[in-house]
Image (cartoon, rainbow, N blue to C red):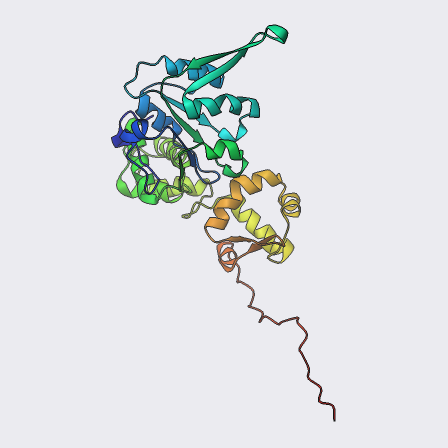
Length: 317
């Protein structure tokens, strides 16, 4: 986990400087695209130098943050914030607005409410499903950022840094080869680096070159664009069994032999982003690029014929 800002690669355009974040912004949330990991770990570590990724209640975290002797307050990072229960959100509302916490103790007639004042803190929420966040919670965030996929250049830097931590000799060409096949995700890039390292140590002297990296990744059936065997299988099924589509997700899942949720969350976003699939109202449709990817010729374009009836004017004599 990066400990300095020089090791953090941000993917947000127009975002304020991270060193000013605790001073200027009470709360903000980040929306990465599906299948794209969030940067909460590095961001949290840099801001307050504390490990707040503990499986404790939100109330306990707020009380701990109020006792932190930090110059600008602590940071509460909530991953998958769309999964918060409504009862927990009720505790967050006064904490986000007035930096106070209302707790009800005891039960029955003896129940009473205690108000606790909290130190100023920054709330960071992360989710890949922003539409599932309740409207009251969303409206209380002062800043909303959307994180994009990493570029190949950024992934190359991440691979080179990870290789230095693993004491693996990786040149720029091999790091670029791994980055190109990582689907814009650092976690995938690191996993591919581990595989390439093991392959180089077992088959060769341990030094990773571009040729060695390409051979190792070819064994996993991952091509230069990051498309793997399952992705190609999905495209072939749509083309061979459904004539290129459209096909519904349920029918496609049965034909492929995979759950519909896995197709929608793991494979489909990247195929759509790369231009291999199109989502229409009728279902998924394979593009001409998908035919080329699986080694087939795209079907000829059929001219569009309007189904509307033509208006015929009759002249009565």
